[in-house]
Length: 131
Image (cartoon, rainbow, N blue to C red; front, top):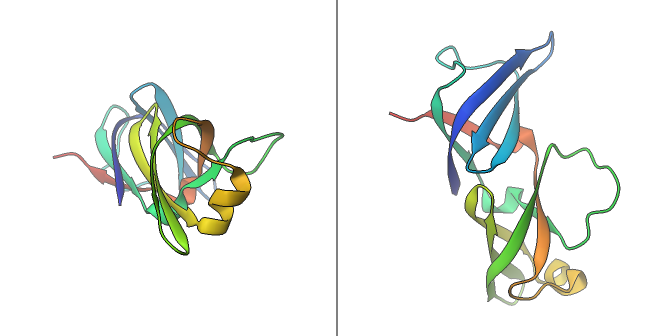
């Protein structure tokens, strides 16, 4: 499980969903929830968490896509198995781990120290208060 410490910078509710924006290090992330937790306020320190399988990677990320969070990363570590690869990425939010298929790894042409883009959907990020 990836865990990132962040500060809430904005909370905006619509009639359907709530956008929660946080800043972690030099990066901004957008979370999407059905409603904001009662305890949440701007300026709160929070822990954002997301599964390794929720992190997509692109070597070339052309055009517009519907994923809210797109961050430049450098591939720092690769652990290959027969069917899966665990990638350690360094980004503006710190170290993030991604789990992708061996086929995807090969097709993307990834290699140690290459630049890539990390993509995480806002609905895949959970949030907890920092106590």
